[in-house]
Length: 78
Image (tube, rainbow, N blue to C red; front, side):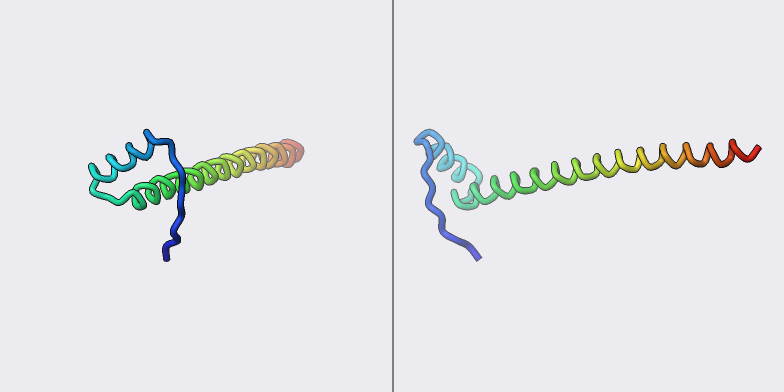
């Protein structure tokens, strides 16, 4: 399903879009859709990276606390 959208661009960008579309044998609509899709994927990628970094940090903290507790148990029994 597609939705028609009207946008305004500076003249130089509109001319560039026209040339780029012709050079790549795509419509202007396809050019803009591809650029927006690429941006959406980049935003998702960055969000996932941040989530994995946060998860890794939480795992490091947990491991550090667990090592301390194990050391207390093993060290306190002797």
